[in-house]
Length: 346
Ligand SMILES: [Zn+2]
Ligand SMILES: [Zn+2]
Image 1 (tube, rainbow, N blue to C red):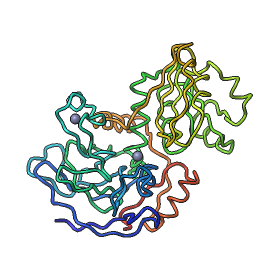
Image 2: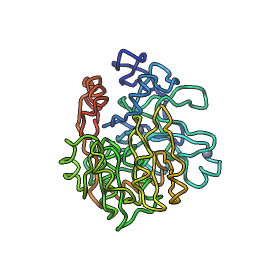
Image 3: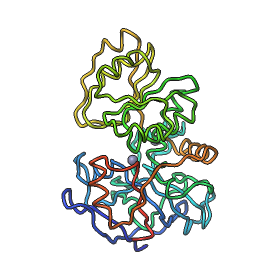
Image 4: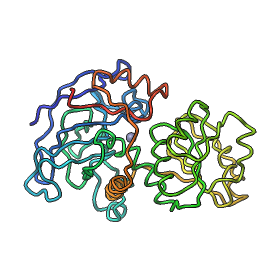
């Protein structure tokens, strides 16, 4: 067994605190990773607060993990000691269903094993990356390109791949007009990728103070969604709208902003399901779709793409003892755009 130091929520209300636990030594096809950085995703906060009703405590969050290989099992072929590697939202899937065989493990028909609060075949709960080490099967690990700032890479493992795969599978290309709804951790990565794909990018946000930030990220237009006249002028404008907002909001407003055949992609999962104006879809053959993180293959492709384009997340690097303040600030949308924990300071 390996002694591990980490941070855990012991219940849904008192926040996170230091936690020591044990991990198994790597099996023949597993890799022991010394964790350097871990990003903080909104899902971490939802699970720490048991908002989905399935959190097992003590809960160790963290699925935007960057670290170095410390030891490998006998049959590992893809990695060697010292390699810079990453782990994202899941660290296992069945491997034999049609989606796994098609390299879309995130949609495994038998269910993925999430990196945090997941169930291992033996019934044990997975403990995530707010810790100093983790053991993962080599098939669920990606290589981190050397030329990128390592701390800024961590959020690419969830926020990055989630937005990259949406643009890839919707075949976004130069000339497309894209609206990005919400400018948080996901939204700012969606902006960076959409701009790099050559699309014309508009940020739709209810916070007018974000206009300068949006322009700094390279967006072409900024629309304040609380200005109803400004929004009306955009009816029928967009090929795609990427909706990153998980708070309750009117999706029909954004369906109106799509062109004929336009697509609204939902990434946030609101607790209350939205009310849908079906006529908005049928009248102009519009589509609504969703998307969930990305495959291991696409994650590696995304990281390689980021290395050639110099794309990383904008982050605020924090030490572990800042965690509860960081959570509070995230709930208040007070972060540009992702907190990353420096795990060496544990
Ligand atoms: Zn996430
Ligand atoms: Zn499967």
